[in-house]
Image 1 (tube, rainbow, N blue to C red):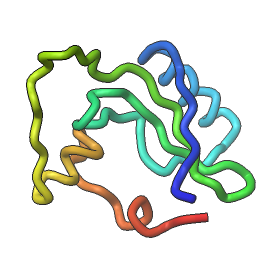
Image 2 (spheres, one colour):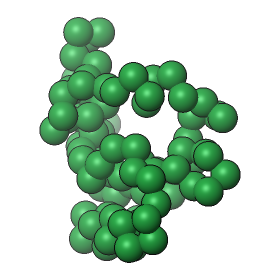
Image 3 (cartoon, rainbow, N blue to C red):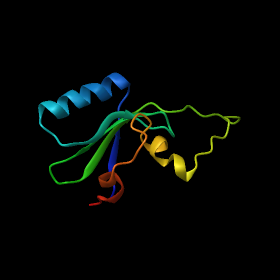
Image 4 (cartoon, helix red, strand yellow):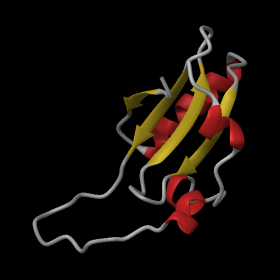
Length: 96
C-alpha cells in the first residue's frame, strides 16, 4: 500500500490539517505542496500504524475538450510535487 487519500474542501482546510498534524507531532512525509499533474494541494503524513496518508484538495476541472497535457519521465518530480520538483526516495520506496 502506498497511501490512503482523504478529500478536503479547500487549500485553507489543507493548511488547517497541517496545523492539526503539527500540533499532534504527526510525522509529515511531504507538504504542504501542490501536485503538478492535477494542480491539487496536498500533505502526506504517516499515521501511528506506519501507513502513509494524504489530505488532498482542488485540482483540474476537466471537460470534453480539455487540452491534453503530456508529462514525460524527466518531469516526474515536477509532475508529482510541483513546488519541490523532485520525489524524495522515501516517497517512491516506502510501502506498507
